[in-house]
Length: 335
Image 1: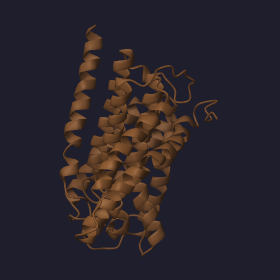
Image 2: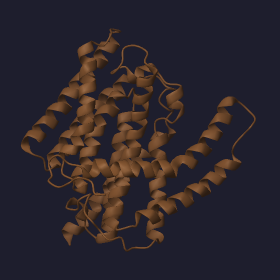
Image 3: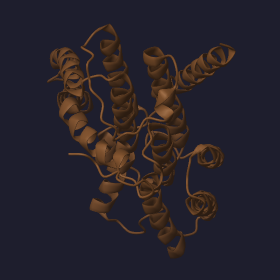
Image 4: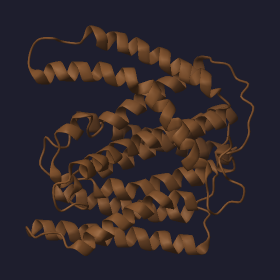
C-alpha cells in the first residue's frame, strides 16, 4: 500500500511540475522575435545531457548500445558547446563540426530503433534521440521547452495508466501487442481527447508556428548549412516543428494501447472537437486590418481544419517508429 501511495505521489509530482514549467512557455515571445540567448542554450545543452544520461540508465539496452548512446550524447554536447564558442568569437563553424552535426542528428533519429518496443523503453528512447537534432536547431530556450513538454507527456501517460489499471502496466506492455478495444467513448475518453488537443496545440505553438517557416533566422540552421539553401533550411525547420508533435502522437498511441480505447472513435471525437473550434475560428477570420492580422486569423482557421488529417497521418507514422526495433525479435509492424 505504501509503495502504491508513493508511486501515485511521484506521478502526481511529475505531472504538476511538468505542467507548471510548461505553462510559462506560450507566454514567452516566440523564438525569432527575440535575440539568441547563449546562456539559456548552454544551460539547455547541459541539462539535456544529464537528463539523457539518466534516461539511458533506465533503459534495457544491450551493453554496446548503452555505451554508444552515452558516447553520442557526450560528444554531441561537446560539439555543440564548441560551436557556440566559435560563433561567439565571430568565426565560421568548421566543416568537421557541421559534419558531426549531421552525423549525430541521423544517429539521434535512429537511436530509438535500438531500444525495446515496450512502451516505457521506446517512449524514453524517442525523447532521448529526438532531443539531439532539436537542440542543434535551437537558439534560446527551445530545448528547455522540449524537456518540460516531455516531462508533461510522460506524466500524462503515467496518470492515464494509473487511472485505468491502478499501476504502471506500460513498463511491460509492447507497442505492437494485440489488444481488444472494448471500451466505448465516455467521459474518460473525452477528457483524453481534450488533453491531447491541448498538448498538440502547445507542441505546435510553444516556440513557433507556420510563420517560422516563411520568416526565419538563418542562425536556426547554422549547425548544418554554411550557405543559403532554401529547401534544406525549410526541411530542417519543419523537422524542428514536427518533433514535439510526433512525441505527442506517440504518447497518444501509447495511451490508446494502455487504456484499450478504440482509436477510430478517439479520432472521431477529435474531429468533432476540432470542428467546434474551427467554427469559432471561422467567425474570427478578418478581411480588414494589417496583413499580419488577416494572415494570422486565416492561419488559425486552416491549422484547425488540417489538425485531424495531419494527426491521422502522423499516427500511422508513429506506428512504424514505435513498433520497429533492431534489438527485439519479431517486432516488425503489423499490418
